[in-house]
Image (cartoon, rainbow, N blue to C red):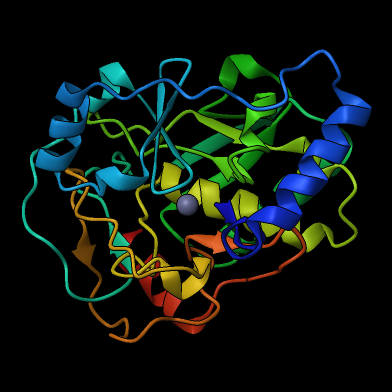
Length: 271
Ligand SMILES: [Zn+2]
């Protein structure tokens, strides 16, 4: 999920970032130098249906839709564009299979992140889905590992990142959380919401304001495109944006968005 404020007040955030990093991380460069995205890659992204205007490339990782971190190799494994959706509450073509199934989540971060993950997990498990999440204390049995994002995530306004399930039906195996946003957060439910959001991507959910990210992110109208991983409307969910969905593209670190009634319909439909 991306930070809403970065979209609406870039100057203020950059000022905060510069201040924060001048105090805390003097050894890091003042601004991350993005790599140029080769035209060949942009063409591929266009062909897949992503909005290539907002793609970032840094250290071999493409950032698409704000918080989806895809390696160049993973890009080649995405399915072709199958047409654009028209409504909200979407899922990808790739879902977690082998249900009912337990997904082990390992948090390799300080205690507050474990506490917030426990809240996120309880939100999912309260829905009596065919997926059961549980927090484990060892990386060896983990399906999803949650760990700290690299320092430059803060510059990009990324609260946390994730990816989509594998073609083989396993959840995406990594969530990266930005400690610069959350180490001092007062509302742990805001942290739990972002973890639940990234977990949603790991099991196949797209952003609910997919057709126009400006709904939650502010700024200009911005269609994320089909993305080549499928964007299928979930029946029973509304056609208008769902104001408090946990899968909106942007939010604030402190903002708590537990599942709405439509989110619950979508979760129950998929799992
Ligand atoms: Zn997201």
